[in-house]
Structures are given as structure tokens and as C-alpha cells.
Image (cartoon, rainbow, N blue to C red; front, top):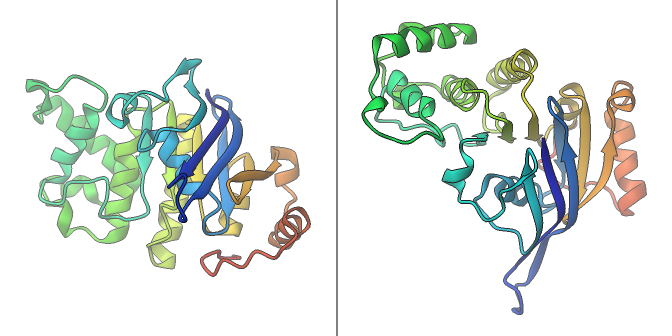
Length: 264
């Protein structure tokens, strides 16, 4: 379970560039929840992900996983609970290392590093089985340098690396935004399959409204550092992009004008 209580974040306080990033965020994800997050540029989505993952520390409020306060822990310390996939396919992997070496690093996430980092026969068999689940042939290229993979292949590998140790929280930070439509759809399908199969508690930021509606059992919309809409599973089943746009305009008093938001 992930819980944020009264979380706020202010950038450049006391200067002309002062900016409120998050204001009194209260958010609870129950085990197995798959929550999509939508909102305009500057709404606070990335700041929310960075505070959960440990990249940033909140000015006020608590962040808890399974009841344990983690807001003072480093990003590395939180990695035992949290897996994250970034927007940039180049992030989250080591391009000069092979596929199996990258998987070996992910396998040790949250554990003490030592001589166990090497790729043993047992690990190689496990990695082969996990790569085969992706259905894109990476299990036959385990010694290939990750830097030689396409963006879609690399993002599929990043998704696998973030999930195969079954993290308690999975963070997906616009992880299909940099891909072409065909590859984005592949990663979207793999995401849905892996999250469902592993019953992962997931928070996914997306710029695609149709994707936000289609995936997961809950949707939240952010604007100006606040959560302005929280749609439950039953209502989400019947939600349309047009209704979502209307909700935003009614609550915020303005139209969603971010050019990066894709309607479907």
C-alpha cells in the first residue's frame, strides 16, 4: 500500500521564481491498484513521481509504503520497494552493458551488492524465461549491448527490469510518450499484461487521455499541484475522453490547453 498525506512541495521559495509544485496531496493506493494520472504541463505529475521515488523530499507531509514512513530515505534505499520506468528509453538501463548484465543489476535491486552480481547459469535461465514473456525475441540476444536496441525494445527491457522482482510500487512516468505509435501500443499492452499478471500496485503518468481511461482501475487528474478529480473503477468503465475534458473544464474553470496531451 502507498499513502501520501498532506504532501506539499515548493520550488525556489522566497524568490521571484517561486513555484508551487504540489499542495496538500492526499493519495492512497491499495494493494493491486493501477492508477493512471493525467494533467496539463506543470500540474505536478512529475514532482509527485519524484517525491514517491525519492528523487525529491517533500516540504511537508508523509510518504508511506506498507505503513512505513519513507520520505527521509534516499532513492537507492527506496529501490527495495519501488520500480520505475522513465519516459526516455535511454534512461534506466546501461547502454554499454549487455541485456543479461542489465538484468543482473536489476535482480540485485535493493540487495547488498557483492560477488552475487555476476550472471550465473541459474540467473541466465531465469532471465531467458522472463525475456521470452515479452514476445519480441530478446531472449535470443542476451549478450547484445543494450545501446544497440531500438527504443521500443529498450523500453520493454526497462519495464521487465522494473517489474520482475515484483516491487511493491511500480511507477510509470510517461513511459510510452517517446515511442512511435506501434511501439507505444506494444509497451502499453505489455504493461497491462505484466501489471495484471503480477498484481502490481501501479501509478502511471500519461499524456494520453484514451490510454489513461483504458488502463487501470482508477484515474486521477491533476492541475496546479492539486488532485482535482479521482475516478473510481465503476465510473471509469463508462468514461469518455469528451467527459474527461468536460470534467476538467468544469472543475478548473479553464480548458485543458497543453499541446502534449493526446486525446486518443
